[in-house]
Length: 384
Image (tube, rainbow, N blue to C red; front, side, top):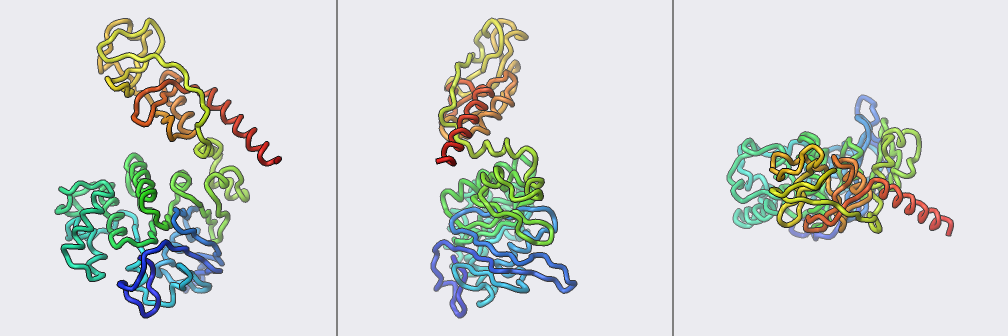
């Protein structure tokens, strides 16, 4: 649901995608501190834009000015051409989803009632609001049995899923997310990032996401805005362009020295050669020497066994060595291919199809050769 024009109620608002514009926006606090300094940028509709930068750079202040949790001192912020300062801030916030750290759930309301909060505020009847809440719980990966639980009975990752569901409950086209995954452990965080990308692929919201983590920004974003201390915009670009062409030394340092490896995530794995790979089933004898991949009945990888140490006796489950990451031949990038090779105890990455079945091996040298060929193609394209 978009922002409300002055004098309009939520029932009169349509649900199209929204463009967000910052026009020479400055935020100056009463003590004279400038948190945001003459920010001008356009957040494109239907994509994820990530604000990233060091502490004190104004990224959260910029986000909170969109829904008037903080009000600008100078300049204008427009959503779909309308100045956010022109209407009722309460109506504005009802039309923009907002997700914060640690979810910010109401502790004494059940999960289903937490998710139904905004629809109920908009005047939906309780049955309709709760039905919508249950649909969204399923959408974000929460089982129906959780509906009657309270936030304190959920893990941190589950609470964040509830927060996302609540923000989506009234179907707002704009979603603001202020470091929503920073308080959970790395494994849960990666799962939540993947879930957000899945939801975005399905829903196509205009998302502004604040992070202090450049890896998270690169993974999630269609565009990345890098802020420097003092609230100025250092660079606003696609993740691939940001990694390949940092605007200055500050951006170069913030992105980090391993940006070349991160840049592999924007290189398709198409054309990468798939080699042969020895496999063995649990209970079967190992090959005479070297590593073999242990697979199940559907040829999905279980891990590795080193025949030189194991001998020719049948492979038992306790003999299996964890196998590192997998390379999906149908969707993965050169970064995924190289990681699979480098993380494998055998030195060979495991290539799988879309169903997770083994199709062969990936060699690190082949990945680097493919990268060199891709760069040569880029240079020919630039020259043309």
